[in-house]
Length: 209
Length: 209
Image (cartoon, rainbow over all chains, first blue to last red; front, side, top):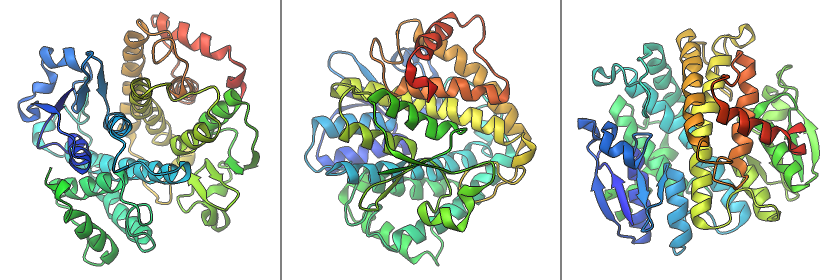
């Protein structure tokens, strides 16, 4: 297999942390997003969407999208499960993970890309150019405030994102928190549960990935 | 089990189509989104996010988020699989489904909620109020044009969203196409592959759900 990565980007980082949790090593190709390598004709042959991560299988099949890659790796390396141990737990993991994606990851992305000079025409990732919408950046920052207060309530009754089970949802949540620094948002001091959870995750060696 | 639904809304529709494909019947409670029933104190006890669909299990566990509910139902009713028959096929289904969600479902939602008078303070679903951003509605319409042309290219080499395998991704795509009518976007005439695929799906009795 071959993994197309970019060490500075939050989306492939979720896959890297999962690989570290499972002790998987895969040949990795760095795609320099800062230089726009993801939009070159060469890379668009690999992923027409012009995005990382991509997982290339030995038969040439290419899997795009973070969660599709992560779940594929979970299936072929089932030890140290990260998607849940039974149907109900898997549903809980997927539900909170989707919320963290929509309300956390996307909010940071909107705040960042719609206000950063280098992204004037690139307010969204992918093959199409979209102009920045400054009001969308502001809304992203507002959404992050709500994200942290909602998370505080959730973590008051959960050790991890799903009860006492460490999962892919913790990897997503952790990545959101560190990505939020790009827009100068950190966990508010009054969110003691989020701070407790964050430091618990940060201790895991996988988060160095 | 109990299913909290709203017959006019696109998100729970995806679950209804899946249930029809699998021949599952579940006691259903209608939540009238037009009347704002999802935001009442009573319903917020059921889902603090103030959203449908919700699947309530017999032990009281409640599952939120469309894909978490759909995958749970797939696990307990595995006949007529809709998520793929092996790890690679499952990854392909999840990858395209996530793209249809991010580039189709979200684009229609942004176009619709940011321009409809009844949603002045409700530009996003969920517990928090956000003002409309007119430029985001315009961008949503633009994204839908790209959505259809990208889909045209994809379906030129796929009978369904993933090769010759009907899956949850077709349910998502079909729901996007019909939801797009809310913002007066229909499949462009020149997208013959998308039209071919749409009519193929439309023939399935499940799409009456």
